[in-house]
Length: 106
Image 1 (cartoon, rainbow, N blue to C red):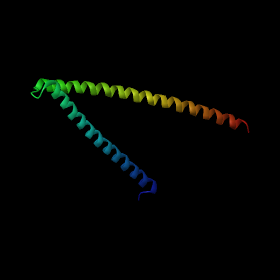
Image 2: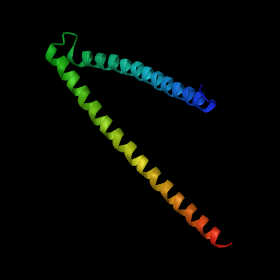
Image 3: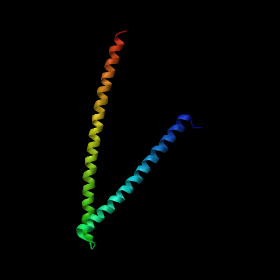
Image 4: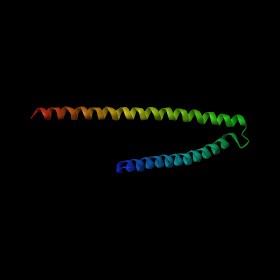
């Protein structure tokens, strides 16, 4: 028999999974929209009679851009997490020092 807390945990896990799936779905829609826009731009630049080499060039260019942006976003995220951890560490240190001072007053 599941406890009340276990049921809450399962509901939370379901909500987290649904959120992840819905977010991925929106990301796919956005990616497809960008793909169409980039294809139209590609047609404007190279014309409709694009050959296989042009298509692979397009794929390679997009891959390089995606890798570059992904690396930059990863670094920015890591930097933000480090800053948050620093701030949290300072806050905890101040709180612990204040608690220690308060306990010595008695």
